[in-house]
Image 1 (spheres, chains in turn purple, green):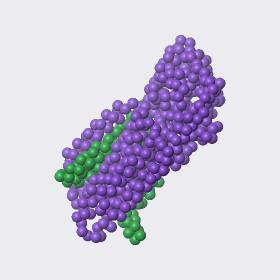
Image 2 (cartoon, chains in turn green, red):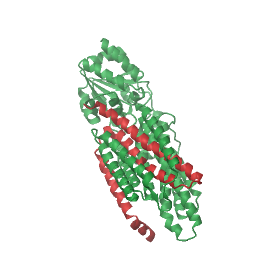
Image 3 (tube, chains in turn orange, purple):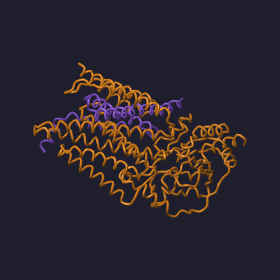
Image 4 (cartoon, one colour):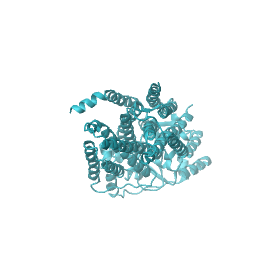
Length: 474
Length: 103
């Protein structure tokens, strides 16, 4: 009876995951979808705690430990998720993803220890071949889980600036070597499950691979990497489902694994790069060599705040191009303020949103939505590009690579081929940046040296606030 | 060879589930507007937190004197809960902002 109830719990869980993800794909139902999946997850968890029965040991023990862990995790998780700033969301996702990966790896370790004790004590010669598939699943879960954990931690550190890009000659080869070694050890362990210490060798190799794998990849590629690691963790969770013949873990894990992989490919497509290209980390390497290449591109001109205020007040259409600089400066509210003041003066204000502006796809939408910017004013790239020819002033707020014309006309550039916002089609371009330093991809932007372009240096929030004051007084 | 074929036969339902779920996952994501990519990634992130169930089973099966299993299992439960709870709360926070702007 209880087992049947548990089956129902898992069925509900699986269905809510599918429907929840489906609802997440529509802005109107997204929030409900998330809550639905959360409810399904709660049912599956509670069902496991109270109804799960193991063939050998019966009902679960150690309730104090389980509830202790759940409570601690829930409190820390809620606090961290509630307190995190909107700008730090991508890091947070990466961090939580890493926790999931670590969880999968730990399950593998404990289960393997458990199994290896049985293998040693059971004299039946047929027992080892019988358990080999289980060893295989455990090892796969361990490798994927630990790569996901180590990689997510590095991605997290990179996004919040604690870890710098790091690569050396031949790193790709070394990476592949480490991975090959981990896989070879895994194969050997599956063949000879009694060599139980090999599991820790595999663990260490996988962790090293996870670190090396993300280390050389530039910040511009972090969204892709996080999405990929997200699907890795999904697969690791599915391994757990295999191990316990647990359908909800299996469906949830594979669902995320498949969806995450597709999402990763979609992101790569938005940047016109192949996944392979991202994975071998050639982006970071290229960017470094090209940034040390020819630097002097002529002179740029600065523009004063009052001049900017003037041209904007008398423009009929202003297009704002937000980028990571806006997110760093927490300037989304000031940005909305500027939009309101200009709209009051009869200026048409729109936002041009590049799909990979910021650190994650949709990053800018989330940020601007927080400041109550109307959904209708956010233009996606193709639509924005149609409107640039009729735009008087393009105001670039801390965006760089997504408006770099090198993506169109410099085949040697590492971002060559990435679709960009054609801001050059507009009459005037004002660029707000903190300095002339290149953007996250580490490459120069010739746009800043064009005669149409003027630079307005300073922190995005301060500049916007001062600009609002100036425009009010015009 | 024979053992591999046998393995496939025994685990047939699981293999079917895996294949079907791959298609479902792809089908669902395909229609997502890029605006929702970040919340979607975050939501998916929370869903793979289902790995917590494995952690609970590990924890619940550990013998009371097996301290290594208890300690590792406990850490796994904490980390898994972080993934689930943090993931859903972060996603909800993102989506809450989307809702406000709607007329």
